[in-house]
Length: 156
Image (cartoon, rainbow, N blue to C red; front, top):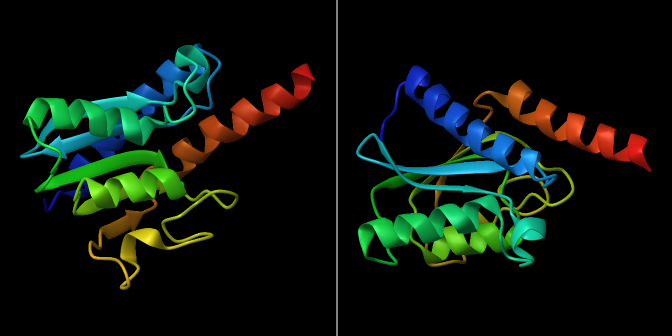
């Protein structure tokens, strides 16, 4: 799970592709991939509006796909790459899935639970802690979100 900078950026670009899928459906553009042994085993993008389900965040979709791929709820020896810092719900799901490593692009100052508002992934009171790395393709990850909300405000 020690990826080079180039590999981290390549996987984050895949997460950005997932964010673009969300954007095409007028969803908040967040994308996620889960990697094991250098291969993507789960993908997801925000799909709350598309699927009419409140929990359909990118991380949840990717975890579901990776669980199916592994035939297990435990996602040991994996790394989750997500464009934006996970929220409380997704951070909880990451811990419950026993994902050991999270790499995210940009911080989420309003909902972030991996260092911004809360720090669920590394909280020593919990039984599972996650190694967290931030800032991979940060500008690109932040820009897609900023552009989305700027355009949404213009429409109103």
